[in-house]
Amino acid sequence: MQRLWAADCGDATRPARWEGAFRAARITETGAPAFDLLMRIVAHAARRSLDVRVSRCRRLGHDEGLLLRLVSLLQRDRLVEASAILDLWLPRAAVQVAALAAAGFAAALAEAGLIMPLRHAEAVEWSRLAAYAHATPGLALLQ
Image (tube, rainbow, N blue to C red):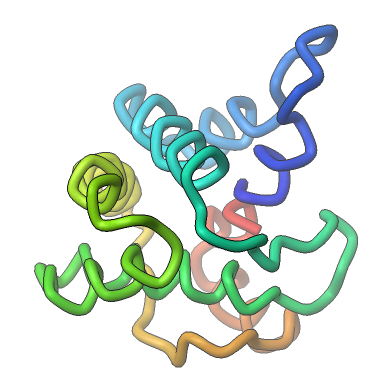
């Protein structure tokens, strides 16, 4: 969804594909606004360019892996570690607002039964993620 959001950003002439991915994954209606707010905060306040790849790329970018780790940490109430990820991207003033949005997104994923496995923040190969996606089809939609 992160890749779809980035691809849709700035093109108001067509419907956002990432919202359809939320519906297909049966993520609650609160998940989409929380995800959109998180992505807008990161897109506008990031201290550096983030590594988000195009949809057809088979490998996760470093920051895509960090987003998955962020969600996983929030789903386990590991707030200090989650804030450390946001600190990598954002100025301190934006971290708290982004943390609230990220927590809403993580909770919506959990409600849909999409529990992110803990994994290293380093980029992983698509084939490794695909093993989890096969067991839980909604995980494939997150990429």
